[in-house]
Image 1 (cartoon, rainbow, N blue to C red):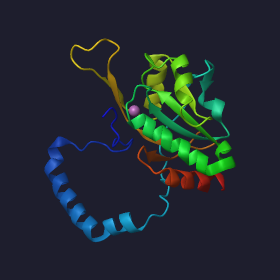
Image 2: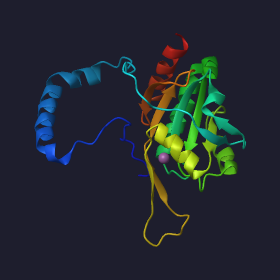
Image 3: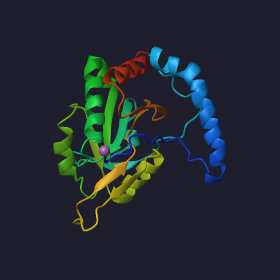
Amino acid sequence: MASKSTKSPKSPKSPKSTGGAFAILGALLVALGLGLGIRYAFLDKGPIEPLKIEVKIGGPFDLVDHNGRTVTDETYRGRYLLVYFGYIYCPDVCPTGLQTITEALNKLGDKAQAVQPIFVSVDPERDTVAQMAAYVKSFHPSLIGLTGAPEQVMATARAYRVYYAKVKKEGAAPNEYLVDHSAVIYLMGPDGRYIQHFSHSVEAEEMARALERHIDK
Ligand code: NI
């Protein structure tokens, strides 16, 4: 597994000292969940409402697209953005997420023009502009691949609360590693503000419906 698919940008670790209390609370919540929550989770397939509180995700970035052009967050103002961080050599998680984005946009038809899907590399040392250009062709024709200097990528990932780290086997060649990374797909508004996010395992249909709700507003 190359990616921490379950990593969410807003799940703070509970302090170790209060672990016992959390365990009890957890047990209570599970018990409550059995009675109430699970019924909702499985029967109510309705849309998930975006968070109403202000969430600071996203912000300025300065990267290079797969055509070698310098781009910033302002390059894409006026369109909804689907922002996904990953890397070309990712064995399964990234291709799955990008395939879901592709299918969701295909379901939207002409409305997909309001959405710009973006794949940001967390492996800029191997993901060159040329490699990105070849890679994005496997997915939706509007997909843009972004890479850049390692510090530019790091700043962008930080703004989006994305975690990533090289995972290297002992004795492996310098260029031989996986990258552990959060696999959250962010939906940003035409003003550049965070709207909501999807798990990389979201169904294309669910993503398409969520996008449509915003586009049709
Ligand atoms: Ni990945």
